[in-house]
Length: 285
Image (cartoon, rainbow, N blue to C red):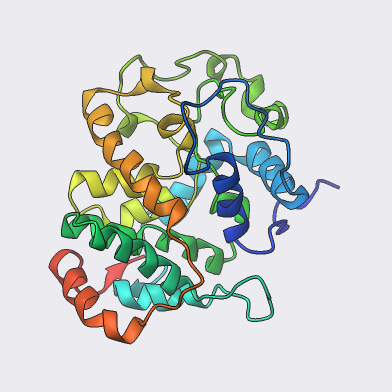
């Protein structure tokens, strides 16, 4: 009998993000190509990546796009989606101290304090809303995790690269080359990425936000590119320009979590106005 693809090795989705902070500490200098990311990794995170790298195939990603990108699951405003995401938190989990909405507000408020554009503040607030995929009974490995291109050779700088040995795409000759099914400099918009919350939310909000915001949402988990410098050969000039925003956002995404409570009611009028400026009314999810 084949193994189940729906176990939940992580106690919560924040466990993956905690491991990212371990891999990419704030004081990090230029990445070393020979760092051992396996060292010190929790067994649950390691199991998460084993499943992710085994099952994220080009066919799987295409099937999930066909399933979810018609955006017919729900109709919700952004604030309703934030409240819906809060239901993902398990009240019995002692490691979760703050609701998801407060973590997102911490990110947005840090961006706001630094004087960034209003669209950047809103991006901080909503960037993880695609995690509601878990509430559609999607497995963790198909919702979070580092994202990467499919249909071409898996970069050795993707964390736990060895687990790709069990990915069926590794045995497809046409996918085993540097460019795979793509052409040099084709642009990331023509590249099929592994499926997850980034790609899903991008399609929900793509008609309401400027390009830098959409790049942040779509590629903020593409760590092989914006932290390791991989896959530049698939990018065009537009990609390279906008990835500067992804790198800038990454600092806020990873390092703004705090145990200090956020006064959601006091902040809501500002964010209601901000949401209405860019993504008013109910959206299709």
